[in-house]
Structure formats: C-alpha cells, structure tokens
Length: 599
Image (spheres, one colour):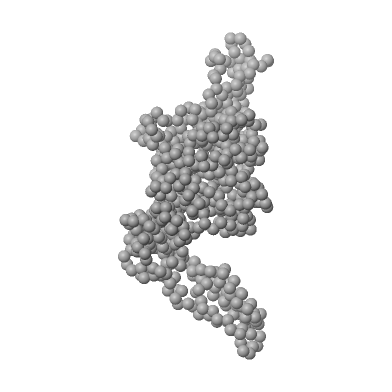
C-alpha cells in the first residue's frame, strides 16, 4: 500500500489530506483503490513512534525519541536574550541545504543503533573523522540519493545539512576517505547482520521461523580483471554481455533482511543453498526454521542436506514434474486459497513429503495467451520456410534443420506444438528441392489446456493444510521485492568498483540502506501509513534548512551584529500530517551565529 496526496477546496480554502491506496488485479488489468483517508491524528490513535515503542522494554511513552535522536547536537544558546533592533532591509536567506531526507535517514541510523555498534567495532585511530561516521555518510547517501563516492564528495554532501547533523565539514568528505571507509566497513559484515537481527527484533517483533531465500544478479561496468567473482552467467538484468556477481538474500516473511552472501557470477542458484543455510544457522541458530525457495534452488542433494539437519522446507518444482501428477489435475477436490487460486494436497511417492498442486485463474489466462502467441509465431515461421523451399531459396536439408531449430529455440514455449517433417525431394519440382510439412500436435494442446496455470510445490511439513502451505510459499515475493527495491530505489546496479573487496563493500552499503528502507516501512505500517516509503522520503526531501541573516544593533552597547539563524523550513499541511502520524517533531532552529561588525 502507498500514499497519495489530495488537495480539496472547501469554503474557498485549500485542504490537504492523504489517502492510503493499494493496487489490485482485475480481468482488465491492474487497478488502484482507496483503502482509507488519513487526516490529522485522531485523539484516540497512537502515533507511529508510540506503537513502535510498544515492542520495546519499558513504557512506550518513555521510549519516544529524545531530542538527540533526530535533531543535531545541541549548540549553546547566546549569552543573553536581550532585545535587538533589526534592520529589516538586511534580512536575507542564504546557504539553503537539503534537510528533511538526511535528517530522517540519520534518525533511522541511530534508531538502529548502528552509530554505537560501529563505534565499538571499528578501532579508533588517528583519523580526523571516525569510520563509523564515514559509514553513516555512505549509507545515508545510498538511501537518499544513490550515487558514486565521487558524486557524494563533490556534490551531494555539500548541498545537504549533514554537516550540522554529523559535525563533519564538507572539505573532510572526499573520495579517499569514502573509499577507505568502505574498506573499514567490510570486515564487520557478520557482526552487523547479527546486531541488526537483534535490533529489528526489538523494534518490530520479527518472526524468523519462516525464512525466504532467493538469488539475483547485478552486473559490472569495466573489465573487472581485479575481481575474480566477476563472471558471465545468467543475468536477471538482461545484460548477459557484462560480467556479474550473484547475491543470495534471506528475508523474513515480512521482508526484513537477515543476511546475504555474494557468489561468483556464473554460480547456479542451487549450488548456493547449502552455503546460505550454514551461514544463517551460524549467525541465528537452526531451531524451528522453515525455508521457502523457488524451483531454481531445488535439487535432491539440497533437500537431503536440509532433512539431515532437521530442516523443513517449502519449495517450487520444475514444470515438467507436473506430469507425474496428471491424474490429480482432473479431479474436483480443490480448495480455495484465495480468490482465483485453488489448491490441493497430494501424497508424495515415499510418504516423507507432501506435494501441493495449485492453479491460478490469472496465471492460466496469461499462459494460454503466451502459448497462443508463440504457436502463431512458430506457424508463421513454418510458412516462411515452406515458401522459401518452394521458391528454391532453401535447398539444403541441413540448413532447413538449423533454421527450424532456431525457430523453436526463439519460441520454446510452443516448440512441441507442431510435428514438422523436412523431406528432400527425389526429383526437383521446378526450383523446389525440399518439401516441408507440419501438423498440430494434439497431445500438446490437450496438456496445455490441462496444465496451464498450474504449478507444483513440495514440502516436508506435517499437519499443515493446503491453503496455509500455499500462503507461506507465496510470501517468497517479499524476497523478490527486496531485490527490486535494491536495484530500482537504491541503485545497486551497475557496479563500477574494480576490486573484490570494494565490490563486496558496495553491496554491504546497499544492504544497510535497504535495512533503513524496511525500518521506515515498518514504522509507517505501525503509523497506518502503508508500507511504501518512497512518498514519505520525497515529502521529507522537500524540507530544507537555510541561514536567515540580518543586521541588528544592541540598545545596551550600540554594537552592530550580523546574526545568522540556521533554521528549518516549516512543513506544509500534508507534511505536518505525516510527521504527526510518525510521532516526529521537526526542529525549528539548528544554530545561531553572531558576529560583531563595524558600521
């Protein structure tokens, strides 16, 4: 669910409010509908921070964010508050900076206690800026405006208010320091994952008995001679021309990340399973774990490995395995799991596993349309081959076989839709040397009508009904959404780093930025704001800080002063509602600077 801003005029006055919307499927395509309208916080409602704090030890109200959680360090007030005579014509606004998004990200970073844990993990040396602070800059930049380290140093940091929040001057943020920060951060990957599992559990009461695992890939720009992991392989980004790495990510059923591993770019998905299971068990234990994986992970060795460790699983199976259960597809004993989806349990051949047949009306319509599309393409291609043979342009039987093979490869979904015969004529018929004929394969059509929209799952769970088993498996989409966010919102691709450690550090920064993203999503969900942070982040990014400068004279000593008040813009009506829902109070002033001048 996501937020949508509305502005309505009532009695000549504009009113801003938010609506919580969701997308849903219909036979005519995707549609959107309003779930709820969000105005100001009702007196009977709890704000997002209070509801978030209810998961923590102690009274929830006492866990409201202190001033130092989201605000910059406290600066000493001027020595006195004497009245001043202000020259109105001297008032100016100077030094505007991006404030709201980095303020929110810094607060999320501290809410997760990453500043404290990195301060303990990274041993302090003689550096001018602590490596924990450099790590915060890298992750906040990835969260707010994904870009290169060069862009952070040259452009982004200088136009944000992080100088006020972190106390680090822009000239101290340069590429050498940022690259070195990557090197300092990487060795603490496992400790960070363990810490975040604990902290996210405190904030959101994580349920870790169901673990979702999936693999994606991200590609490189450059030769990558210094990174042995960079290999060509199956690309999820449709960039098979570039070297890549594979990333295996484990998330909870609500999409909160628990950990990840990086594999070489030519690694098959199934060969990553045992590594990731051992890694997660080492960090988080092995009791009461149910692993959910798609069919690309399935191999008999992997399932045997899980069973030997006492593990449980729900996995997809290859489409071809459906034929072993053909007799069950025609029976009527299906149970409705949700609108448009029917399921049934089928006993396994050895009694140790349960198989689940599922069929989806939407998926059936899609697959039938795809088969019709590819069948028409194959038929059109066969007609062209026939015309080429009759005109004498296609004479060689081997060349015809190669052309037929390419046609089937390009339209593999309908490769068995026709029985094709290529025969060399005993005597040419004018220019024709080959005869090409075909007929529809009736068995292909019958199987397509029966199996389209159906898929098969297998599990060693006992005493679980069909609908529950299917719903647990379908939560695998949370892992797929995690990859989509890291690629589209956090720009994990392409990777420009050229050494293995820098590549791994880049992925770690993206992982930490995704943790911030999910923390904000969970906080929003507690506040009744949906779970899509993009709108909130964009609204916060519109809040700026700036210096209101003016010339004033003290009546007491007659001295003229140039005063700069470093302030934050007032939120508009819609932004005020979001802040209210989250339980946040925006700071009004960051600091005051006085300078005596001679006039």
